[in-house]
Amino acid sequence: MVSIFTTATRAACETDDQKLAPSMAYVGQQLAQLQDNESAQVYARGLACISDQFNERQVTLDELVNYITTVLGKELDQAEVPGSGRISKKRSGEVLKALVSGIVAWNRAESGESATGVALNMGALFDFGIVYMQAKQRQDSRIGVIADAATSVSPLGQVPHRLESGKLVIETFLRAVKAQAGDRSRGI
Image 1 (cartoon, rainbow, N blue to C red):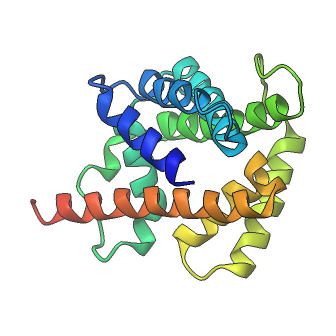
Image 2 (tube, rainbow, N blue to C red):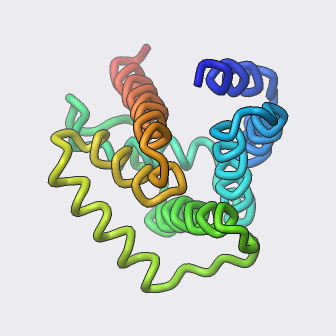
């Protein structure tokens, strides 16, 4: 796990590009080079699938951050976070579609199917809804619920140690976004 975090962090710092999809794809390519680490391979395929969906729907880093900030809004100390309203409902829907489609594509890739041409369907949305409701019963915080649901429905949920490490990765990312939103609201 340490080699995955080290490689991902180094790769993320190497990308000058503020474009979300290419940066994610690059991190995934770097993780794919850890050929003896099966968890790194799983993360690499996941980043590739989600990156493809972000690219297809032209999701920007600002939109992703604003979307997450909006979703976490109830958990933030302040009533409103500056910048959280900058994403329209239409774009917010595109971010959610990209995330869900990326996870569906990732599941297909892990099962040996083609991850291209993924279309959302009611079955996938129903599955996500059920997993989300189950996560709400296990977790107290919104961040915990999101991390639990995302890892449970993704290929990370198929192996216990990946489920736990995946929750840690997603929670860490969401807490960083939350902290950044708090800094913005205080003018830092």
